[in-house]
Length: 216
Image (cartoon, rainbow, N blue to C red):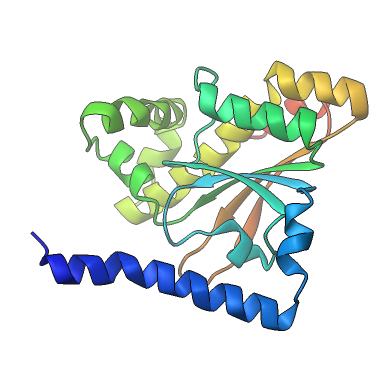
């Protein structure tokens, strides 16, 4: 158990960091917060992992207000998850984003836990989403040499499956019919070198679905 003084210093560090950040932003751009307060008009919805090392704005070099973000363990888009569907609906119907990006990452703890059948309680229930991805691609994944390669490939295949789940929602299909947007993309991030990689998944309309996902 942590010492009370150390515990207080730990969380107060964040508040002090906020004060320094505010002062820095105001020194660079005095109207910064007034501009942000007028509202948000992001072009992108980012569905990513909750991993603390994968921050959408930092790894894409963007600023607050440019990306609308939803994060959960292993960047899952489950049709029974009201949280992700509410975010998706708001982004599509209210913000009218132009792109939806599902971004996973190599070295994902959720992916490894699902592959090695670790976890219990709510975590185990959540990882059933990944177990299902593994089941569909088991032959390909099991043929790989070691756990790291298997986790990397499952992370990629999970992104592709979650992008497919997005494309099959009524929210996206209706938006395609109404305004011809958004594009849906599948990306993967490497913590080892900081790079983003496209996985060959860009879906522009319902006619792209069999063409894109039929390859995987």
